[in-house]
Image (tube, rainbow over all chains, first blue to last red):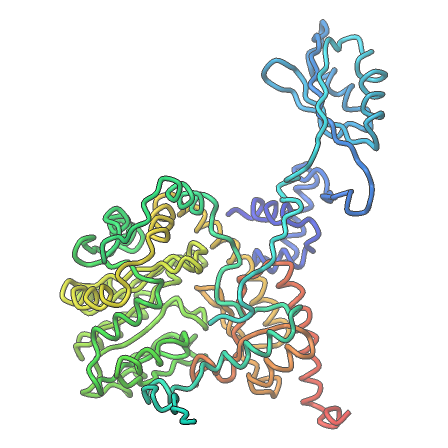
Length: 162
Length: 403
């Protein structure tokens, strides 16, 4: 695997790895790894280092909703401006342009069901270009950012085996 | 009341057989349930999903009967194709391959088919713990052949020449090696091949780690050398490469006369390998090589991390080029391997296997399996570093030991 890809793959699995640890794993000088990561950050191939959190484990309620949005592209500019406008709302986690019956797919993460309702009725629907929305609530998460949740996967191997 | 002496009913061969050295350590580790174990000789991955699914699908449809002694014909053909494609070995599916209960049954079959009482078998050590006892159980005499840390634990013909006698019938070797991680290249094998031909020996080649080689070095089978197929009983399986230890499925490939002999034993003692495991392994060969490669890449990362960490803490560690073990020397700590492993476990909660368990050439070493997540390896290396520093300090200042 190429060095950049190898580093990205390691950071995708665990963004807390230190540069020194990565250098040992990819068997390259620390300076080279440091430079490569700096370059990836500079050109925004690495956009951010984030943490995957299961909020209910610390007793916090978080409501995730997926909203399909149908819009009318405005004269002179296409979907980009609309999508970027919606992305400005801080409760919006993801905004994607989609193929199919709806144009945009938005995910929202807020504290309550009411907050989702408020967002749709007061922030999203009133936008001129929004024609139609359809809201889906996430009932249970099974896998998030490539990580299986609530899976008890004890190491059931023998402690010592020849 | 008369009490029959049941011990005396046991065959003296079994009664006098020493229990595996790993056993004592196993009991000790079990008393410390939270220990991070680097003592496990099996993958930490679960068998890939599509392989498990192939079996549940098959169970729903129903065939649950015996298969032929050799195994399912489509499975035998897949093995034959696999050996050709991966290792350039030509074995006839109908007359040269038997599917077995893992590599373990294959080792037993090979030895029982070959040995007469008093035959000597060269056992390259350090090695997997079963070879010597299986030679003894088959009526043979195991003759250990040392390999050396200074030679990267590769097998050298001089060491074989010193141990061969007119009674030597076979040579057991395992590369990529458990516990050392050493591999044998074509150049390394060249003089061994000449030796085997000169002495008309049979090589029992345990190639269970064949898919796990690193640094772009592909596994070389000793059977692939010109004329060596007739001198080789090849053992391989799915446990390590496809993370399928619990399925107990492997195979043996050998020229027809040896195949026929081993098949007789297999049909009377095992009948056939489990059908479900054959189905799983067939799926592994047909659609699992990519996952096998992915797992190898994960091991490779861990390997580099562990070797670096061990070297950094001042233990001499050769770079393992295969399997999933590092085998550092702990001589610099002033402890013997047994004491090192025991104290490391009790003081820092990290389990490793003392190298002497695998043969006398391993006594100054410990086996660290890196078939464990990077997170856990990171923690284990941190604790081990602390331990090694402490022991080195104690060695320099013996008065500290009294404190």
